[in-house]
Length: 489
Image 1 (spheres, rainbow, N blue to C red):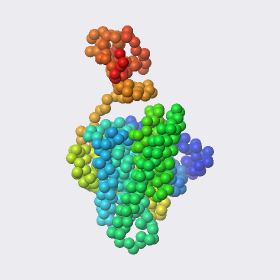
Image 2: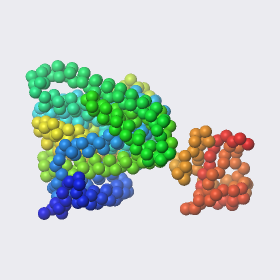
Image 3: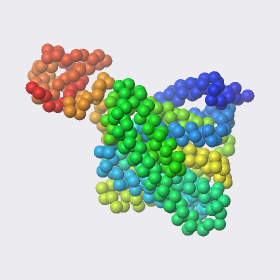
Image 4: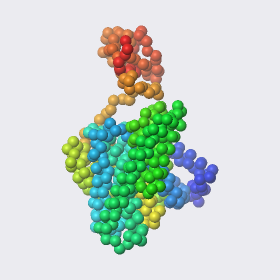
């Protein structure tokens, strides 16, 4: 018996709880090791799932419908959190570019990749289903790579990439669902490609348009509700906000439109229009939940993989990955951004490179498995390998590519706020490091003669925190936590 064969995957099983606790502990160690090695944590989660799966350590979990449901739930939470952290002020300059890439860019990628796959003998409908599954930039992977590595990009590229990846997953999902319905629905047999294309375009417009409407409606309704029902307990407020996202997604799915888009738009409205008490604590709550969902989704999808069945797909998946990296993705990006003169060629090249695939495409491939599309197992294996190659080649080299294109920079160090939230009307918080020049007029805090409007809140010396006073002797290297703003004296 394989080592993990003793575990039965039952939601009420004590064995399952033990296994989950071990996997979470292992994932934390893997993420820490990955950050030191420069490897994307999500790729390591995926590989860890494969390691404990049926072909290696022997854990069997083959309930495809349950796995697809858990994966969709996790992705909904990840996208909702991304929407909460999307700033109107930051995305407004790149809003049109982001929307163009997430809509027209996805469709161009599907067309270019789909026709290329037909040239190597893959049936037309299967080719376009695979192309649709692979057409988006995976939001979980992009958010993880940009934020984990604390990558700071010029030319407003960070908000552009996050907006594109957050909004193109719903487009790719809708296209996949439409094409799967064409492939499995008897009523579409015998229809001409042009008739299917027209019907598909109308279905896509309704899916996205009504999903957007639901998201906006629920978001602005939540603005009023959250204004009345916020609790002093930040955890209750965070749970209430999350429930609004689930409600938006559920309403959209009940009327058969795109739930991911609805919850993402709802989150953007809440994040920008609702002033939440304890915002910092709520943000940390959602960051923790998002990490858990990423861990669960990537590990579960890895668990569904059978490496022994994938060997014959290695070369086709690698060749297709290279084609999309260097042909279809760059072509779609450059064509979509032609009207926008503000983006340099270097910026467009980096946007092309950040076409990372991850859990999203694998999850969409599971949708094809659930609905029993022809060759669905081959599609899943192909997409899984493709995503692994993409995470390795693109996800692991974004920082290097950004430096080569001279589009990254080192940000100022974050200011220590000791868990406090500083209202905007009080001014800006800054962290000043004392230098020898600062002490030429005297060694005490009073001798600094700070300009009007600046107040020192705390002094950090090595690992100690000191309460400031005028006669405090300062040392080179001390950190002064200061607030810059108007005073009433």
